[in-house]
Length: 315
Image 1 (cartoon, rainbow, N blue to C red):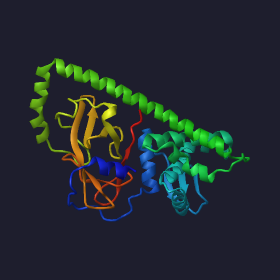
Image 2: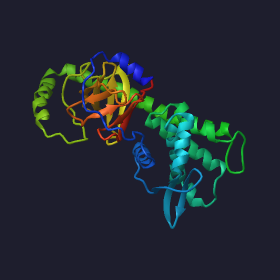
Image 3: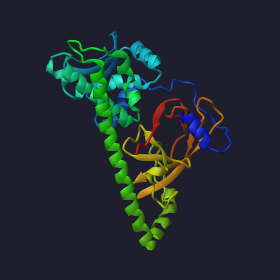
Image 4: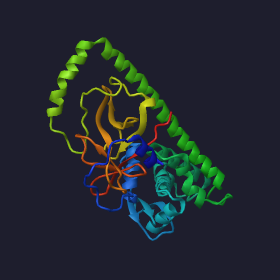
């Protein structure tokens, strides 16, 4: 679906550029857990290991905390529900057990803990850009319909995931509304102070002459699509970079890549087409190493490694 929308929006002819080698673009469990930690803003206090277990588990062994997973299990679940978000939700659930202190009690699985971990999973997946359907995909398949001695029934677990997902969604909406308000105030200030705007324009040359740090986009003080203001209605997708999880990047409906800071919104690049079926788009920017975009909105570098993703901005 994303590919069809982007294809319609882009009218430029295909560009011949070097695309990534065909290595796996799906993030591995360690990469996924790193992204989850970035979303929640915490440093990992546990180790991640593939193990000969039935599915996945959060455990403490020898005083150390671990997330254990069965590689074939995660792959089979993703294939069964046809979305990689299934594996992400399972790992997020296990992280929820650690972060909520469930593994410290020694009580084993119980209804309250499982629902709390489910809610955490839903919250994290919304923050990462998953739809509610994607967040619930694995649980819809794996959970039992009725309650057991250790786990709640399917309807309760799906409701807990939905609760977490909607909680994160509320935060995102509130944040985007606050962004619009702040951008509007900033625009009013700029329009009433032409001398200040002139000073900023004079700093463009100095800013562009600075040495740009790789993988850390700098903001060019340039005119944007709406005089420095980015409104929610103009946003096509949010651009999430794993290396800069707290930075705000957006793809507009005109396919411009915009970086938003407390100083305003600045265009730092655009989305362009390639002649590759696997990587049909790329972000063309002087402030980024070459970043390609798959049909599903996954961002990868030239080695085929996942470096981020596109997500919807809900209003």
